[in-house]
Length: 217
Image (cartoon, rainbow, N blue to C red; front, side, top):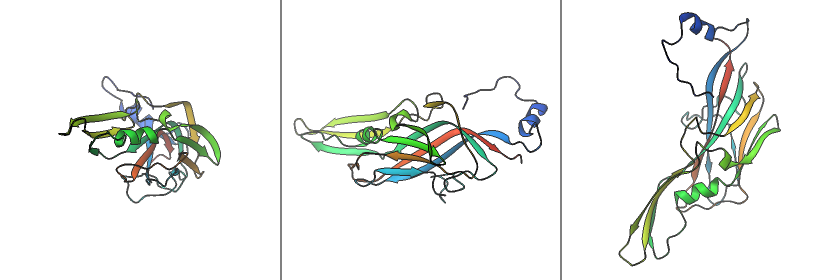
């Protein structure tokens, strides 16, 4: 979606009225919109996650209103998609050899999986998950502390798949239209299950930015 900052006095009454009134009877209005969904990666088990296939009662996790589709008479023009790995903060205890575990390692391994998008069982996009960051790629926070025993260090880590910045996202270089009452799906896949340390599950959020066409209120 365009990143715009209106200047001046803003819109006139006539412009505001025109923005919510179709040029022809029966035509829809267009608004910027984001669809999002959250799924859980189960440590040492998951190799595939499908998004937007269910309606979640918790609207913090998903805003889908119909399972796997957009209800009539709405259409959605997809311009951007982003993946966010919701990795919890990790603290790694001191050891003679610092283990390669924690939030930074989780984001790195998760992002090496694949992603695909299809509408009506037809593929419209395939690629690596690292091509769909929140913005700018992985964002790490890392600190080390020395333990009393010589050569031992403890670490504290936090990481995400980038900042949620509209100016720096993967662009489809055009729009992909999702029609009403037609099944669509985003799938994330990995070649083998990933085991996390600490051994807890990881939530993953996928969202789509674009324009929603809906009937005029």
